Length: 195
Image (cartoon, rainbow, N blue to C red; front, side):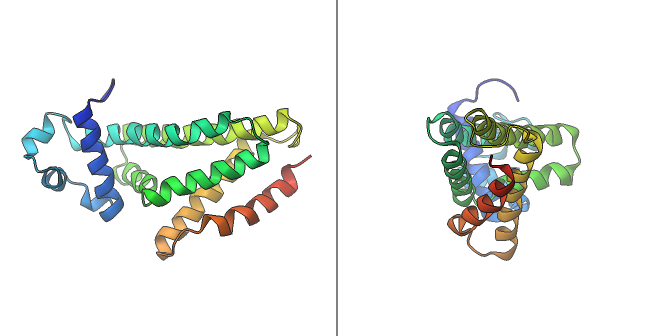
């Protein structure tokens, strides 16, 4: 699937994300999706040729939703440390509202062992990591963070904190309380990263 999505395709993708969020990858079948949308399966196939085509579109659609929410935060003219804090809260907010659907998409890519799905999920994760790296780079440029900090590794540390916190919350079925974990994480992270 390439090009700009049509309105109906976006509606289908929203419904697919809701199915994933509510029931995990097993819930996302063409039959279930058609039922939720109150259309026939052949009608659904007019918009997406296969489940793989649907999944490929989901990766891009998910990133568009995340980017529209997070990119403006990276462009705000505020203290880089505050920016990182706001960014993490917004990221956790997104996944809380969407019930960790990004992790379900990750499991789909791994489960199917399909190179295209893996590449699409890798792009989503890389894009997210690039936003983190951008904030850290701004911190270095403004003198708030160490000049010798390896931004790729530092952004992976932040990404790892984010992924593991969401994963633990989903597996334990405990609510994700970002306000309780972001402060302590940043205190430890910035201990090594600040100038």
